[in-house]
Image (tube, rainbow, N blue to C red; front, side):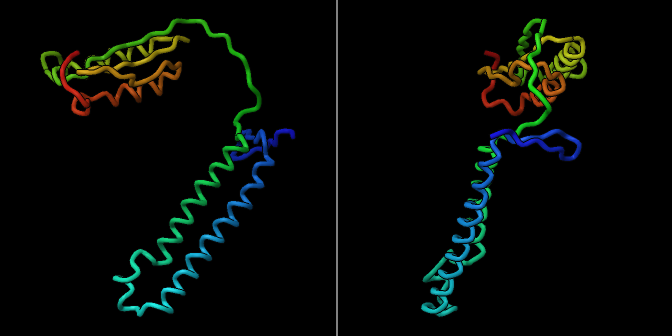
Length: 182
């Protein structure tokens, strides 16, 4: 089957396998059955158990909770069906040859970096220097590794410098799971 292309909010979108969207009909049917089952269950309980004893003899039976459970399950299934349809954005795939180097920066995020012997603090100065490095890079990929007691990848290799800056701003010695400079 050929991909289905359309424009939405000014963007070229498409579905590689639109026939999978027929599964949404099945999802709607499953949701309707679950809702009907919850209502029937509630009616049976109302017929058997007096209202004043329902909280003790039949807890967790309100239709609202059953509806929320069915709704969240149906939403999850709908998202799965849409993912099977393989949504795509853009007009075409294009091979891009990239020239440059991969830069991996390790930043100490231990509590000692909060010292103010350098203005405003060691960690803030390191972040400012890394921000200026990111501004100077052209076509290179960058990764950020934070360490304090244990090292972890804060930002994987990317050429999206704005995203790298967001990850860099998130480095904070107070949120590190383990202290120490190791």
